[in-house]
Length: 313
Image (cartoon, rainbow, N blue to C red; front, top):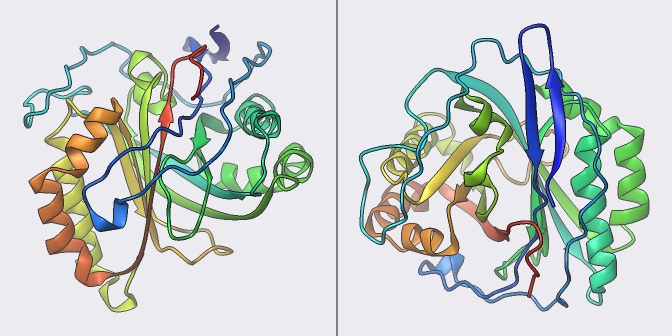
């Protein structure tokens, strides 16, 4: 089932389909040592389709390019010259990542309750542009089990989000009873100035793999070395539009959570696309030549985003 929400201002009326996301615990084999993992043990569940709600987002869309662009087929090969979204002017957005450590004996019913409340928070609060969340598919050294990604319009929206009574109630009643720890990372980035990539709506965003990579760079590397490393990674990803739908990265400005200095969030078209990219020689070379010597801590996690109605195994 597809729910809808509406944006309206003096110049534009935009109807955006809201497609529920779910997660998969299917094991994904990853080639780098830092990414090698097995899936955490949680019961299966089916995501609930929440009731249709109306959400009014005050996002200035004047001048946006709203045309749809063709998709490209995932190939195990190689770089593709064309891109999902042509190079155009950019628009700033603010990305929020929250990683959760669920209690050991979390039931499928409690897990569904927690994820559904977090997902539908976007319909109760202003400023949230997009949400993606799910059960983490890979083991990780910090033992995080679930991930939440949210996109906001401005830093001020993120500040209001943390203080919002509705969100605080969701944490108190539907998240923390099932989790014993969490970490938040917030960063500013840019995306294509187009309705689809900004709101992460449309066919290309209905499924795939969300790859969240938290990084802690050495203090001595902050500045030019870090900027060079991130620029090299961004350039590489632009060469693989057949594998990657969208990627953002930036410096963490969350003062209450400085364990990680930067974050990178990448939406892959499929699990196969994810595995092809992280296993590629190009990615390995960029990581080893640009990141390894200046990174003191890294936390890569990924989770599956499935079409509505697909049962999670």
